[in-house]
Length: 639
Image (cartoon, rainbow, N blue to C red):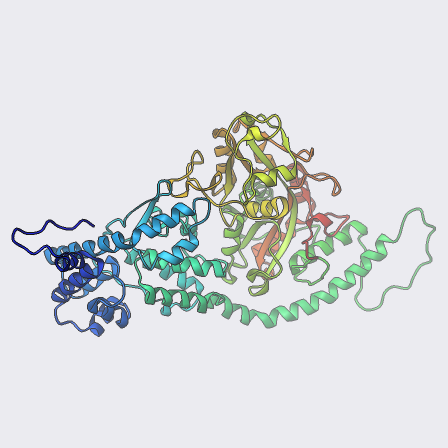
């Protein structure tokens, strides 16, 4: 900062210049601000202000004493409001605060800018951890050239109340309080929070964190995000620690209504499983005996009727179907039998009421076809198909809606996931679904090898233009992906790429955002497969992925081209030579569906001949058939 010109007649020696610089330095501005603040807050005790603001008393004392670093304007304004200071007085304090913040930036901001310049090709996470406490009140508005600007001045609500994370009883409560923290900070836009966090909290991540009633999958990565979010809302280190500790305490605490009801049902479920396991085992033995009889074999001598429970043979087809129904009603895993209520396979029961099929956007079309078939058969039934994404559908399942909700998920959940291990979700494989990798036709390509596709999505540097492939046009590569939590994206990453997709770098899919100018390639995200296909169709050089049947709609997407992979056309074929982007569609329920519930009745229908024909007409291969309990491609990998 430039020295002020000396006054006429004033001494201009070294001591005078040092004094002038000290007054304009950060420490001088900080001391001036602290004196001004103490005057405006009057005689209010720190304990009183802490109680009114919801801040810790140590935070308020540090603010009044000028100890440590400058606190955010969000914290300062909360104390002013608690002390009844407003209008011109508040504006005067704001002016002093801005001067202190500017002095802080003048002294330490150069190191941060230099660090970002040296980190052109990397994520700024480590820089955030190193510098956030040193120069916290600036937002990154451009990467190259690096530009930092002061935070946007927030507009606070008339009555502000800082939420207390210790009041959260479970992880769902915690995320509700996190949304309230954003309101306490003046409800900054998600793009503003992204800039305040220097790019470590992308817009899509913030949206997922703040989704209403969200019970997210917990992780160490999520804990770090919570800390960044609290800092971006203006909380000092002591307050941030409270939020991170609360997250750590609650990360494995399911909502209490789920736990309480699950415990109440546990004893009943164990009894039902024990009874039905014995019945299923008996059916399996009879099925094996029925399959061993071939018409070409000589007649066998009549055997004595079996002892115990009487059995009326229906033939091989009826026996297999009966077992399939029992497998579904009992939530059988692959290779393990556990029964439930056994509805008749030949005449599926109809429910009266409402059922929700919620989740996968890739299975929406087929789910609607099955819905229409069921509703035409069962006049008193109403089925609602809600395509909100696979993982969002799974998160919508609770014990309270177990009887009336089924989640549609692309692929199996991990056997050690919280949903399976802690909440007792049961998965029912329905049909094999084929997906496709699609590009805009101006790329001039018709196929890639799987290895070439992996190089495009590689995290460690890869092609950025289609002309780097034989026959490709001179067009930059633009990736259009599904958002985090999409089942289709999970299958693409696990089965095709064998690694996560690159970092998000664009909102409009045309060019990199300024804050992510250092990213290797343009990559945007869309929340449904229709949005992915529409964006690829309208964006030259774009590549994406979606369910095969939707991708073949040339009338709706005339500029799309479906790529072959390793010379294989997209589709469902033999296990040995299948397109490498195929997965089963799984229907998940919260535990075993209750007897005679809409979920149990619908699952009984799904294994019947009518639903099987609908699946085949839609281009799917049913996982269950009269000749096979569960086809190998539909089985979980861990089986």
